[in-house]
Image (cartoon, rainbow, N blue to C red):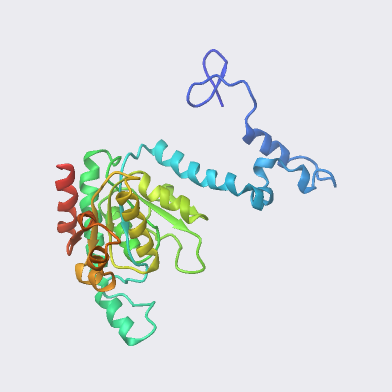
Length: 286
């Protein structure tokens, strides 16, 4: 809280609040003399007791906190819409090492796929150029925050002088924040479900590059929400038509009857950054 001219205490939003802040009490509690009583876990303030917050019974609270923290920061930053970029963490940049390859076939495929790193980087620059017109509040690049295609997206935005968002998640490997995510827009998640919500809550478009299980999960999550009308239809662009048609037989699903033939219209294919951006620009008449 801060004092204003009349001496009254008000919050940052101007609301009158005479109560002592939680942060003040937290600081005060940390400075108390250490005794068997004050050192006991039971004596810790509940909201600053991480062991307590990690108890199984408090899972609903942790879910809420993960939803709230990112939402509050994005809202305070004034970010109104995003362009979400999904894709493989294992795709190297051109000339880079195919570090994830376990045999020569994988090495050949991943090295060839570096073209998608370049296109993701170019695509993010196109997003950034449009986002600039909206003071970087609309069409802000959002990725999973990791390496590969995700890195390329954040990198392209950074090179264009634009902020970008990274939604990382704790995994046994691979998932450390790449250095191109805007630091104050770099988030970390425990729950996949809450991370998925944030990917789509502000999405004006979803652009998906070749990837593995995680990328497939994100693709079908988005498709399901649009198909079932749980979210409005937005441009859903798949980069690399040959790749996608080789790994998923969409037409077979329609022929079998498990999806409607009309559901195929939810998908757009692109080979270049310009192709992908045209789908988005045409949809929103940019």
